[in-house]
Image (cartoon, rainbow, N blue to C red; front, side, top):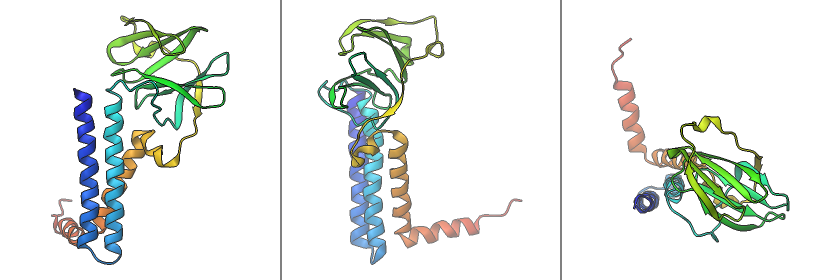
Amino acid sequence: MLAYWAAFFALVLFLLGLGAGIGAWKRRRGMRRVIGLIGGVLFAIGAGSFAGTGAVSLYEMPGDVEWPVGNSAQIIRLADGRQLAFHEPSGRIQLYDASGHFSRGWSIVGGGLFEARLIDAETLEIWASRGAKRFLLNPDGVLTDAGTYAPQSYEDFHGEGQKGSLPTPWPLMVLTHPMIAWAFGFGGLLMLGLSDPKKRKAWYRRKTDAPDLT
């Protein structure tokens, strides 16, 4: 249920941003209308992507759906050349063939941060930060065991693999990391503010009229 609320929140933010951009286009003149429209679109993309990625991390996505990874903090290469890429913001582990083409993926729902290592050629061990969860899967994502690693703590585990990147279309890069989405949204808000001279003047008056307490 929480995932649906997060998805609803993402949709609301997206529509609010688009509405603000369209409203700026209708009310402003000259370059202000262009800046306002672009600002609204950027806010819609950034805020919607930020909340949408959070929704995905709470939802078990179908295995044949690829989520844009971009840069991965942990990529494990299997003996046959395939790659396991870990994407913590979406809670996804995705399998790629030796040529870098997506094969399938699976979700560590609600696990937060996680580390992983190969115990042997057929067993992947995963430690999730939330709930001290421990999973055993085969390299194709089939769960073979689930439990906890308590009383040990998450900091006791260190995964294998290395950082790497996967080909991602640039329009989808905003979905690869919350900070990128946040930058889009914040930039959009700034542009919406710049497009509205009344708000800028009101902000300036508040700053200049503020009492000097030094």
